[in-house]
Structures are given as C-alpha cells and as structure tokens.
Length: 497
Ligand SMILES: Nc1ncnc2c1ncn2[C@@H]1O[C@H](COP(=O)(O)OP(=O)(O)OP(=O)(O)O)[C@@H](O)[C@H]1O
Ligand SMILES: [Mg+2]
Picture 1 (cartoon, rainbow, N blue to C red):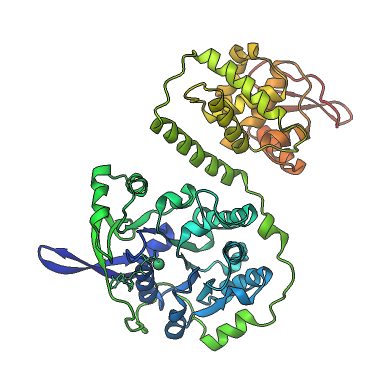
Picture 2 (picture 1 turned 90 degrees about the vertical axis):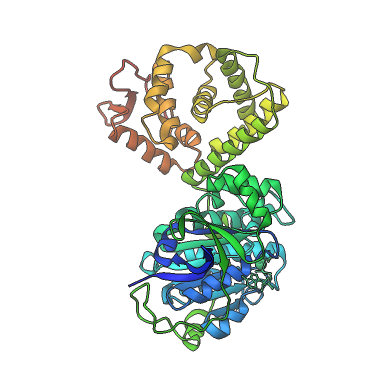
C-alpha cells in the first residue's frame, strides 16, 4: 500500500522523474508553500488537492474563490461565506468533521474583516469538534498571510486576533486532532512566525524580496547564498524540502491539473467511502441555526502554552532586530543591568495596576519598549530573568535582593520546572525567603497570567505534588504557611482572602 501522490517531476541526468508527496507523512508534518504572486502556488495547491481528493478529506479556506471549480469535479461542498452567519459556519465546520465532508469555504464575496472572522469561525469549528470526529483532514489555506498576519492591516484588531488564534491552533495544536495544515503565502515575512514555524515541509517558489528570502533560508536552514536560487525560479517550479517529500532540497516542476480523479486507487485512510454531494448538502447545511457565535470562538483566551510560543517567537524577532540594527553593547555591568531592569519592570507594572492578570508576553513587550526608549542599548534579558524580576516587583522587593544567595538558589531550582509554572514557584519562594505571608490565590493567578483562581489552585497543587513546596496546615485544617523542602525557607502565616 502506498500513500504517495505525484506532485510533479524533476530532471535527473537529463531524464524526467516523478516527485511524490507521502500523504500520510504530510498529514503528520504539515506544509508551507511560499512564492510571489504568479509563481504558481494556487496551481500547486490544486494539483495536491486533485491528486489526494480520493484519499483524504479536504477543507479549503479560499479567500479568492479560486478553488470553487474543484467542487463540480471532486464532490467538495462549496460554502459561500457570505450566505452564513459566523455561528452557522462554526456549526457547519463541526458537521463537516463529523461526516468527513470535503468542503471549500469561498470568501470572495466577503470584505476583509468578514473574511478573517469567517475563517476564524470555520477553523475554530474544525478545531473544537468532539474527539470522536478527529478524522485526518487536509486543511488548505491559500493566502495564509491574510489569516495569520505578522503585523496589523486593514482590519479590526478583534478579527485579526480571532483569525490568528485559529490559525495558530491549526498549525500548532491541530495534529493530534487530525488537522493537517497546508498553507500558502506570497510573502513569508508577512506571515506570523509561529504559524510558519510549525510546518516541516516546504515548497519554495519564485521569491524576489530579500526579506522573504532571508526568512525562507532561515526556515529551511539554508545558506543565504543558496536561497538566492529562489529568485530565478520559473512559474510552476519550486524547491521542495521536508519529510513528506525529500530530505534534501529538491527542485520540482509541478504537474498539470485537472487530471482524472483516481477513483479505485489505494485508500490512504481505511474508512468508509466519503459522502456524495447530495448527502453532503443535507448533512452539513440542514437547519443551521443563525444564533450568536458561541463566545468561546471569538473570546478563546490564548492559553499559556500559546502565549509562551508567541513570546518565544517575539523574543527571537526582537533579538534579530536588535542584531540587525547594530545597536552597541551596553556599558552597564550585569548587576547594574538587572537593577535597571527591575526599575523598568516596576514602571511597567505600575502602568497596569488593577489588572487581574498580566501575561508575561505583554510585560516583555512593554519592558523591551521602555528599555529601548531609555536608550540603554541591547537589552539581552532572558525570559527567566524577567520572570524573576516580575516576582520581585510584585512582592515589593527592592534591588538589594537581586544578589541574595537564597534568591539565586530559588531561581536555579525554578529551572527544573516547566516554564509556565516557574513564576508561581518563585513567588512562593520569594515570600518564604523573606518570611512574608504566603501569596494569596489571587496573587498566584496574577503571576501565572490568568484571572482564574481555580487554575491558580491547580498550579499550587502541582508544585506540592512535585514536592517543590509543602503546605503546612494548622489544627482546624486551615492552610497556615508554605515551606520549601530542602531549605529553611518558610512563609509567615498565610494571608487571608
Ligand atoms: N505548474 C504549472 N503548470 C502550468 N501552469 C501553471 C503552473 N503553475 C502556475 N501556472 C499558471 O500560472 C498562473 C499563475 O499561477 P497561480 O495562480 O497558481 O499563481 P499564485 O502563486 O497562486 O499567484 P497569487 O499569489 O497571485 O495567487 C495561472 O494561470 C496558472 O494556471
Ligand atoms: Mg494564488
């Protein structure tokens, strides 16, 4: 049994040989296609879709209506986003997964803000579908930079966030749910980094702009000189790399489209046949409710894991920008730098008094900006250092504590923990070292970057489970104080409330 489909051909010693894509591998490792306008991306996607149509369910997010012609030939259900409310699109997406209907979401008749919202609703419906519907499906997004933009644009912030979050879910967390993202973009530099970074397969077409070429060579781990080759590629020619296609960069000329459907071929997935177009219409479109979109779609909070990923991407970008701009090294020594940084963290928090929670990503951005505005040169603060400073600022600790040997020990202990929980441990450790009352759940929630006290409680329980802290109870069973095993640090009596 093979799961290969033929994408195109290449020349080998004067002979034309086929280039295939391993569909099963592709489902697990996702694909990013980039090339300037007219380089042949949509043609490539169409080739991939046509060749795999009989093997696997397909969803196409189609901003320009390019793919509606597939519907007639390959039984895709065509949905015009203009005809449905967001809530209906969300619901239809769940049914599409339930019944394994291949579908095209055509958004050519919707203005840009609506395109972002429609894509967000539909992708969220795919993502949120119950576990029993997690069948493998290719999710093709053409013009992905529209839906996961690296910066702002002609659309509302709310629409941008909803769409970016849905695309992030698709590319970063979709695999377990059977969602395999295949995304195409004209401009790599305009595509959100965390979204691009999750693809392990690449097809790079003609690229003119230096900045896109640099991003492409970074992603592919190529020398920048080698990436120059992208400039000279002809229409329909791509360089392929990745586990589903080739372990080494391989030139490929994409094959023709409108090849006959390859019915009767080996099925990649051993499922019952996909539904016919008549069945599909009934299954997906019947009785859609025009109610409000469920809140969780538009208001899904970015999870700690997501914000950590975004933060990492942001830091890398900031570091690169700093290197590129050639800012000179700071004249401060390490201690002075930390003292100055603590001062700035105090200022950042002071501007945000009254907030229930403050994600580290937000603090980092505000911090970096202030640092730069202050003309302090390269900031170079690691996220672990920042986390420690945020704890100090929250416990009204002054800079003398920065060099406290217990505090330094606590910071190295924290490194044994998952990133997102280190701040909670440091908060408790800091109060214990300083013999202050243990933090309240509200304070823990704040440091954890959430407003949920239940979530805060879970982090405390986790730390106790892992023996990083011991909660001591008084006789009535009320929590009294927290001790840190292996040290003599102990909080004062627990604050009430
Ligand atoms: N491999 C190919 N063989 C034959 N024709 C091709 C091939 N690739 C692209 N073309 C033709 O070139 C034209 C441009 O291709 P296509 O629309 O796929 O570009 P694109 O990269 O999607 O551009 P845009 O970013 O503007 O959407 C189309 O008319 C298409 O049919
Ligand atoms: Mg196109």
